[in-house]
Length: 95
Image 1 (cartoon, rainbow, N blue to C red):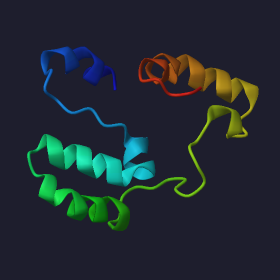
Image 2: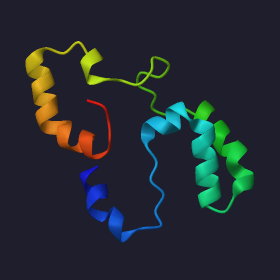
Image 3: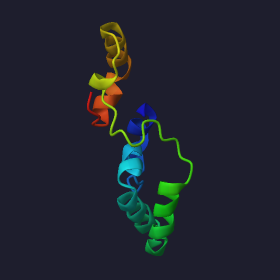
C-alpha cells in the first residue's frame, strides 16, 4: 500500500480499485474495469468472474471488517493501530 502511494502520481492513467469494492460492488467494478480497458462488452463476463471464481473472501457475507469488532485485547488493538494505522487512514479505511 505504501508503494502505491509513492508511485500513483507518476501513473495518472492507472485505475485504482479497492479490494473491498470488488467483493461488495462487483457489478460496478466490472463495468469500471471493462470501460477502462475499452471493452464495455466484457463487463458481464468480468462480473461473473468476480462473483463466481475462487477469490480470497475472508469474512465474505458478514459485512466489512472493522477494528472495533475484532474482539482483540487493548494491547493488540494498540499494536495494530501503531503498525497499520497510517496506511489504513491514507486509504480511507475506517479504524
